[in-house]
Image (cartoon, rainbow, N blue to C red; front, side, top):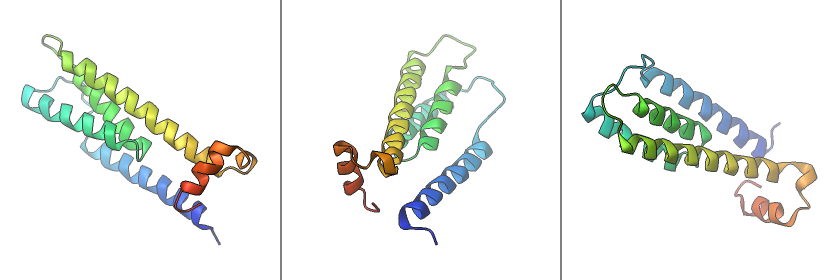
Amino acid sequence: MLNTASFLFIYYIGCGYVIVLLWMCVTDPSGRAVEPAVRRRLHRLAVALAVVGVLHPVLALAGRDVGEQLRRTDGPPDPRAHRTARLTNWGLAVALGVLGTVVVSQLGPFEDAPLLRQISEALPYG
């Protein structure tokens, strides 16, 4: 039987898989430029995904994909696209850092590290 931490980890991985499948259903792989109205909506979506991406790195990856879609343009370059892409890259870096910290705090050899012990005790399922 799985303990609580293992069960939550499997659930976490499964949620990531479902998010990837949903994202593949709604993304536009054509590589064409987007219209201005869609561009504004994608900017907001990319920022939201970058912020919420701290909860799951797959959300941050989806936000990064939106940021890269915004950089595709046929007209003059949009300065917001560069800022949005930079924000989504930072969101992905933070999400991976949070995931790495949580995973390392649950590994046996690192239980004696003071900072990781505090993190592990603070987790609700530790």
